[in-house]
Image (cartoon, rainbow, N blue to C red; front, top):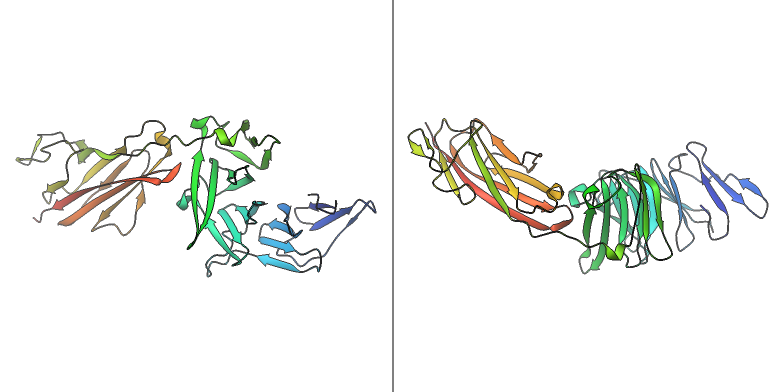
Length: 333
């Protein structure tokens, strides 16, 4: 990395830092206190501080006085660096420092000296962030191990809010896998990301979200792995009097307590971008991510009243969420 004084900063895997001085045509080997000798990325901010991303956190070097500040992941503290393995570092037009790691991104607010952390659970396509670059409108584009995302961070009275839009192979990418530190912004504002199967070049102003409002419905009810149709008689009673898409409540005998409920969001443009989660109130203590079958299965439930809750979230627009519920009563023997 060439700094503002035309010096070349060269990092190594285990030999620390090397700084080439073009005036003397020689390398210096500064011995700054460091969290690690491994160097993954080097970046100079507007204040001419040198940021060094390592495998054990970040060193920030003040070139004027030689002071070094360390940032590391501290699991017992909030708002610290999201992970110690750092892949990329940039500074946006507002002065915020963006740190891409193997476990998500951390954005440092210099006023509070605290990080805002964003991961898959907040909407990223992958926690492994490989390259980042800012477009002319202040959006941060990043390549990951599972496609590309752009993140807009907006300051408000309570802190910061953000919007995330994700893109993958269905949107025309060369693939979902990208290479670390393989990003470039052209003079005309176009952005290039290099990946495992080539590269993608695009005008970020021409990339628009195509998400449609989700409409989540139940699509099938199965008892002991057999689909139940409207009007089917089971144990001398009709279980479904109308389609499962319209059914709000079910009553099961005690020996009918092994069942599955399938569901789908009616957005056929790109179904692969929809995340499904479910939870059975009265039984589950947490939400579960559904697999590609989009089905929740339960067996040997005790007699009682339950509510199956399902939600669908658009990866490309985490605010686009649809919910549905089904009340289920299992009768005692």
